[in-house]
Length: 318
Image (cartoon, rainbow, N blue to C red):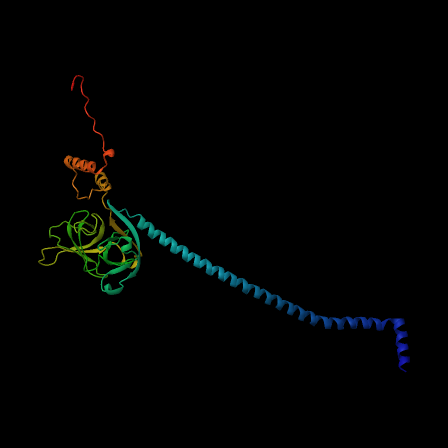
């Protein structure tokens, strides 16, 4: 029966081709129905993978860029610090020391440290092995900073002019009014004492050192007059001044040292010739003659020098 049905369909298909057409169309539809979801899945999967790989690469690239940015920021900070240091050191090198004085740079390593913390002081990295002594002047590009209070082998404590224990004789540059500049402590400025009531001192004048105290050279800028007033029955003017430097921004300073005067050529030649430290006095002619006679007695006869006898003249002794 099945064979009969198969042969009948086969014969009918040969005559009409209907089964082949139906099979081809049905197969194509089935193929499309199967391949379309698969293609959609493949597209989605491949797209996800590409995005995943892209994001992984992007993340790695971002990490590399972050590292490069961090290094660039570090280099920029270092370059700015070097530029700031170069600017400060240039200011120190631009300081022209007074005649017969030399200049040496020093770094500030601490502020108000140790037993002197109650004073307006700071510590520098120069000590006795660098030639630092008590009262060595300390200056900055703006003006006088202070003097050395105490020192060790490789460090020194500097007391600033704003400390109440600091007193410097100064004179105004314009009116040549003299006075004693005294510190008043941190953030309190300074006062110029013993200024006569009729002194022509003006606000804004620069006060410079007089050199009378024997510590600072003459003519160094110290402070600027901020206020001039009279108080009651006082015999002197009330003069306020401000230091020219900022202690909070000070990182490098300069030390001034007196250059010893050159030695004169006569003194150098005299020192080169060593003096005779012998206590023996020079021998006289009599002593030298006695030594010759003594040496002659101790020598054998044949070693003694023969004295020449005077020749006799003809006719004598005959």
